[in-house]
Image (cartoon, rainbow, N blue to C red; front, side, top):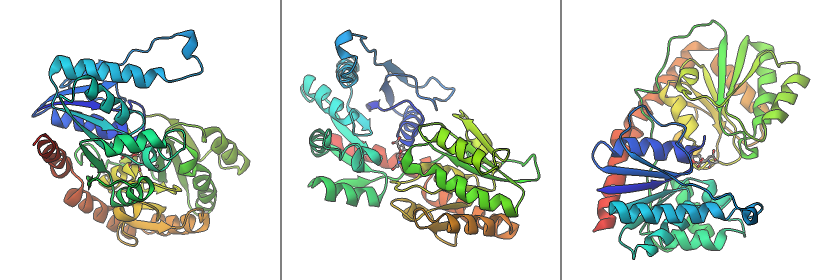
Length: 363
Ligand code: GMT
């Protein structure tokens, strides 16, 4: 098949999945990735075509950022036509699905449009009154629609009144890339990785860590960057724990940090799947997370981690201490987590599901 993928190139789950998928599909198909920049998780192999969406800096557009969706639409239609694409796969509905729909219309529906919803494109940004109509239209008019969890499917059906079939295709992780690494220090490592938006509740991590490091010698490694970072840095300082909290910023090979960690924290307010937790599980790292959304599908309480209520920083700290102070429990949870990844979330299991969806859509 000739497949085009539209995605965000930045640090965020949808771009990571889209890029990994592009690499894996390129082993068997002709692949074209369309975005405004090269994706951050781009591998070493140049196995697919990359088409950069160029933006016109025009004074009239300064405060009206409409130009990206139009430039993306134009680039997508150019790629559909020039390479005679069969499938255009939009990752993240806003604006990628709308642009894919319009680009395909420009090409007289010569391709089929598949949209994968990743989370906030449905229940946060996509539901916002500014975007709801167009998001609903692009979902309903995609030739196929997928979500990354059952939770997101149900929520999307309810919020958008979608009548078409939604297929759940979970996220995946490469277990060869994400695996346990040899530790190079004695003290315990607690880790978190995200784009530091309010939905991730970074201050809850700092509060819980204050309690954790009163009882145990440990470090908190925070991977990523975003709007909540400086607030978290100030909190760590005011709690007097800033020497134990390391803000790493965006890291290209997150597996090198996560693979040496003892515990991963994800206290999000909402999470459609939790790719960051899946990556940690693949590295045999137990998780303490909130029991929200897709995290309930991914993590089994008392088997590979613990689930808490949103905002319950005492439980976050207590469960963390339980795991960190009992290496047998930590290893058991870690092994269970890795086993689950190997049974359900590898590329070998998930990628063929996208391929068979493409084939069905073309039929
Ligand atoms: O919200 C983010 O952290 C970024 C966002 C994205 O699309 O880039 O992540 C969403 O998609 C990921 C990949 O499918 C999921 O694993 C995340 O759970 C989801 N984030 C939220 O629902 C908050």
